[in-house]
Image (cartoon, rainbow, N blue to C red):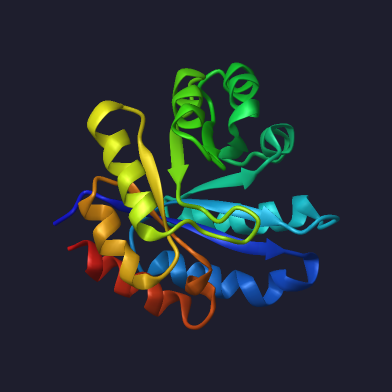
Length: 199
C-alpha cells in the first residue's frame, strides 16, 4: 500500500455556501485519510465564521486546515497553517516559528520550488491550475519525480481528475491533492475512490 496521503482543496467559499458545504466537507473527511485541507475563501467572505466551522470539523478528523494566501489571518483565526506563493514563504516561516504549516504553490519553474524549499516551506505543491489551467499530467509527473529524487521537503501533487491519483502516488508524491472534480458530485465517494487508488 502507498504511504501517500490525501490533501483536499475546497472551492472558494462564501458565507452563503457554508451551511450546504459543511456536511459535505465532514462526509469527505470521514471517507478517508485526509492529511490536510486547503481552505479557499471568496473575497469579502466572513473568514472567522467559515474558518471556525471548518476548523472544528477538520480537527475532529485529525486533518490540518490551511488557509490560502493570508498568513496573518491564519494565525489570528487559529488555522493550522497557510498556503502561499513562493515570494511570501520566508516571512511566514519566520513569523510562525515552526508552530504552523507553511506550504508553497504556484511554482512555475524548478527554481521556484527550490527557492520555496530553501525558504523553509513545509511542502511544495506541483500541478495546480494557474489562471484556471492545470499543466498536463506528464509535466506534473516529471516535476514530481525530479523533486522526489533530490529533495527532502515533502511534495503535494495536484490531481486534476480521479484517474491521476494512482500515477501521481506512484511517481513519489507524499500527498495527492484532489482537484475540483471532488466537489462536482459525491465528495465522500470520490475520496473513497482515491483511497482505493492509493492501495
